[in-house]
Image: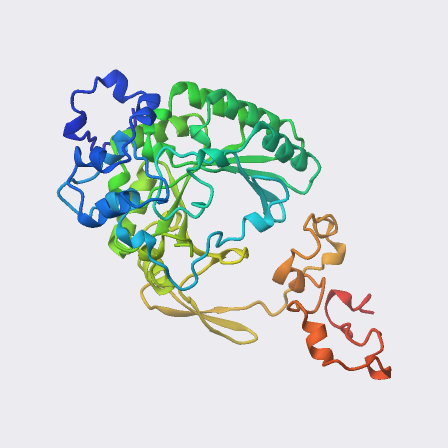
Length: 447
C-alpha cells in the first residue's frame, strides 16, 4: 500500500458489490455506465446532460463505476462529472474547430503510426478506453470498435520501425494501451524490444485514473521486463487522486517505472492557479512528476472546455517559484496543423545587451546576469556529436539555423511568389551570392 493516504470512495449504488468484484478491472469494464438510466442511479442528471446523452451520433460515453464514484452527486459543476458526462454544449460549433486538429493522420506513414518528430513516433495500438474524456483529441477514431487496429496494422507499424533507424523512442497510445488484452500488450512490447535502435518505450494511459485496479502485480511484473519503460498518466484535478490511484502509482514506481502526468487545461474544471497548485503538489506526493499542461485542442466537441492561452500563462506564473521546480509542468499548445508541441510561458527575460541580460523572478525581483566576454564558440565542424547527428534533413528547424546548416527557413512557394513571374536573367543567375561571407561555420578555415 502507498505510504501516503487519500480518501477512498464508492457510490452508494455500488455498496453491495462484493470487494472481489469491485477490485476486478474486468468487472469495472463490464459494468460501465453509459445511459440516462445508468447515470440516474448514481446521481441526478441535469437537463443538458440528459439531452446530450439522448443525442444520436454523440462521441462514445462509458464510465467505470469506480470513476463515477469520485463525483459529488449533489454538485452539477463537479469537475470530474464535467470530464466524462456529456452536456448539450458538446454539439456546439466554434471557430477553428477541426476533426483532426493535430494533423496526425497526415503524419501517418502506416495505419496507427504518427511520425512527426525526428527521433520518436506515436504508436496507436487500440481505439478503446476505460472511460471516454469529453474533450478527446482523437474522437474521430477513439471509441469506435470498427476502427480498432488489427494484427496487420501492428505488423506494418513494426516493419516501418525496423526500417527507420532514426527512431529511438516509441510512445504507445490510442485509445488506451492498458485496455488491451495482457498477452497482446506483452507481445507488442516484446516486438519493440527486438528492434536494436528502439531505446525507450513509453506508454500513455488514463487507466490508472479511470480504473486503478487494472494495475495488478501481474501487470507490473510484465512491464518491468521491458525497461527502460516510462508511463505517463492523465490527471486533471486533485479530486481524481484517491487512495486507489496512490496504491496503483506506488506499484508502478516500485517496478522501476518513472511516472509523469499530462493534464489538459479545461474551463470550469482546472482553470485556476490554486487548483493547479494543489494538483501538482498531490501528484509529486504519489511520485508522479507533472510533465505537460496542454492547451485544449481545437477538436470537435471541446469548444466549451477551451480557455484563452493567457489563462495557462497565468497558471504557470502561479506555479513557478511558488512550488518546487519539479512540480511545474511545461505548458504548451499542440500546434494546429501538425506543428507539434510549442511551449508557452511567462516572460522572465526582460532585456539584453552584448554583455548582459536582464531577468525577473516570480516575485518581480529584477536582476542582471553578466555574459562572458572570452567565450570560445562551439564549432560544429570539429564536434564529433555534430558530425554524427541523426536529425532528418528539413526537421532541424531553428536549431539548424543556429548550427549553420542554412541561413533561412522559407515559407512554401516563397521563391515563386517573389519571382513575380519574371524571366531568368543575369542578376538572377545561380551563384554563391547568398552564402555567408566570412561569418559562422560556413566561412572556411578562418585563417
